[in-house]
Each structure stands twice: as structure tokens, then as C-alpha cells.
Length: 356
Image 1: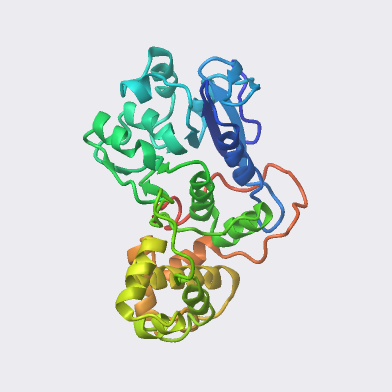
Image 2: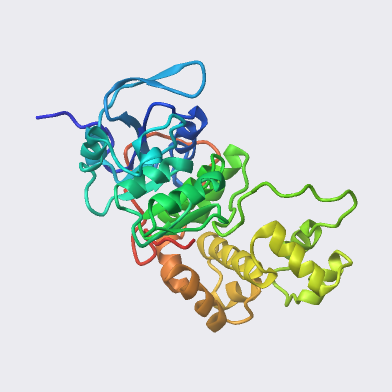
């Protein structure tokens, strides 16, 4: 009997499939985010392993190789498979097809496994057929190529990541952090994801709908941005906030403010406000015992019925169901143990739902 690649089967098992030309930072992202996620008791929630189609040395785009000890057998055991980019031209990127060894490896992935890509790893997912008919993204400079090679994929070049069911794609490099934090948030709640983000010293949540930082003209010196208004809004989410009031924080007209806001954030001010309020409500539902009506008021929705409407639209569950799934006490700054406790994914109605 073949020994298991994963040693802790009560944890969520993440396999990172690397290829020659790997960008080392992209390999580090899932190990850092998932490998530093633990629950309120200090129990690690994920086990992460690196694998390759053929175990052994794997070239990176730097002046060193990495030694990969696991082969494709890890894919057959994983709950989540992540495919980083390769910076060497290979069949998925050049021709939109899989070579036989890679196709054989991917065939080992069990139905229902969550599959994700970082940067141009999306070309592997597309070549395998997982993106057919789905929304997806990749690095902005490769979006046109992905669309040309795979016309059935609905490529969105203006987002950080896309979660379409259990198939997820992200844009270039750093957006892989956002994607991994999104998966942690969906598996175990915002409190766990926010704790990981704090330890990693990154923003706890950049919504997947936020625009990629594509090459644009450098703003002229002295031109206002909307950052002050956004910071002000986050301090006053519990109160009604109108466009005129937001624009006033930047001394802009409503029309100019709305245009600049969308240019900088990739969303309208109203959509951005709603998403921030949902995040506030998620945090309160997880971390407090206050009634749903009070959560709604503190998050700026005004009433429980309005909160339920927006929560259902964004997350597919009611606030009460979300609380039952993700209610936590506190998440410690340092794990108290490394036992094999925990669950493979969040349970209940909210588990595994993709909200981006």
C-alpha cells in the first residue's frame, strides 16, 4: 500500500503543483497563507505540500532550483490544488494544450476538489477544460492570449481574482495572496483570514472585483485621489453615507468623485460601500454575540431585513446561518499547538461558497 503524502488527514489538504520556470514567490504564497492559518485553539487548519509531475529538481526563474519530493500522487489526495505560473514557455501557454505527462497528473484530481491558479497558471486550468464557460482571469498582459486560445472562457482582465464555484483564478503574483486569503475566509471565516493577513502584514481583504494595477498614465502632481473619502467612510459605516458626502471629503463634484473612485477602486462607490458593510457584518457575526438587528445597525444596513437581503445576495446564506458556521471566540497571535485537529473545510450552509 502506498504511503499517504499528507500526514494530517483532519486538516484541509492543499497541493501546490509546480512546473519548470516557477516564480519562487508564487510558491511561497500558499505555504505562507495556508501554512499560517490556525483556529482559536491554536490548531493548524491546513497541510500544504509541493508536488511536480516528476519529483526532483524544478527550475525557477531565478538562479536556483528547488527540490520537490512529491509527485502527482499528492493531487489524488488534495482537497485544494493550486497551480502557480511557469515563466518558461510550455504547451499550455503556447498552444493551449496539455502535454501527456501533465494531463495524466491532472487526471488524478478527484471530482469536487477545489482548483485554483496564480497568474498564468490559469492556462493550465483552461487547457484542462476547467474554465470552459466560466469567468476567469490571469495576469493582465496575458488575458488577451488566454481569451484567444480558449474562446469559451469568459476572461475578465480587470479583476484581482475570480471565484467561480470551486474553480478559482487570480491575476499576477501578489493577487495570489488575495486569492488564498479569500479561500481561508470562505473555509474558516473572516477572523481566521484577518489574523493570517495581520501576521503576513498585508491588507486583510482586497475584493476580487478590484481592478488590476494595469499600466496607466501616472496621475498629475496635486490631483486628488479618493483615499481620504474611503478612510472616512470606513470610520462611519454605521451611518447613512451619500455620494455627495463622500465627494465632499475630497472637495470634488459628485461626477468627478464617482469617475475617479471607479478608476482607483474598480467599483462604484455604492458597491464598494455595500461590500465594506458586509465585511463589517461578517466580523461582528463571528466575533460577537450581539443580535442580528444590532449587527445590521452597526454595519450600516439599518435593519435586519436589509442585512439579510445583501448577505444572501453576496454570500448565499443568511446572517444566522453564517454565524452558526463561523462563530469564533478569538484567534491567537501564536499557535499553541500543531495537532491534527480541526476540520478539512468550514461546515454548514456557508462552507465552500465563493463570493467574489
